[in-house]
Length: 337
Image (tube, rainbow, N blue to C red; front, side, top):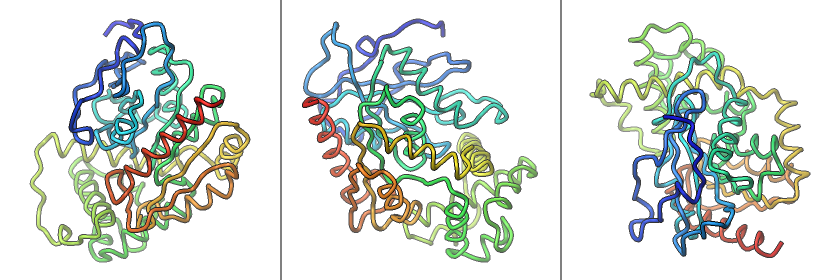
């Protein structure tokens, strides 16, 4: 696609009039950012933006790494009737793959800012969940002057002890199944090394195992681990391998953040003047509440909302309602500044 200049107002679709939580469409654009990136944009439900009005929409960041943008990520923004834009990150969803050797956190930060620049968006709010919350903090720390506010859902804290604890949780679910694929007691280094040295066939087996264990942790339903061979299409197999190779790449490198880098990143966000909210499910086994509480203590001006009987995903428990309320609150704060 040629490098045309779209403004947000030109690109954004009207919000759907019904089915806010489930309606999804093809991307509005494939932007060439050194490889095509799939981009979506939508006007607020209340009214379309005036052609001459410079928007301050919400940038929506999906999780993973290796996930993709979908209706559940943007439903809270639709319910709050606010404009938003988002994209599938590199090597994820509908966006084009690059060699893993050129993929790192800074590339993802640059991509987000490049998308905003191409849509003529000078300032934006950010909504990010799980890994997307990590990326949100990185963008906000790198270009704080471009950020109006931040809402984090179930943030992933990329510190090695916490990632090791995640793999320990997977092993506890099914010790024999885990050991068969990754080795007994395998943690971040060994799991990621498995992906580095695996044959294509073994990569698929590893990806299926990780996916089954992670889904069991998300849902609390272990039945699928007892099933035999998974029947997947070629497209589904490719998607699984693509996703977990990317996750292993980031986790092997601690998401390209040393502990000192992480502390500096959070410190820069703590000194910013924009509002920041953290919404956390207390039944989240993937990114447990301790991470959000630690972040809240480091970000003294932040608002922490904890939700009983709510898990990790955007559509669980009261998560959508709570995020929508924080989005509306941030919009109100922006109008009164």
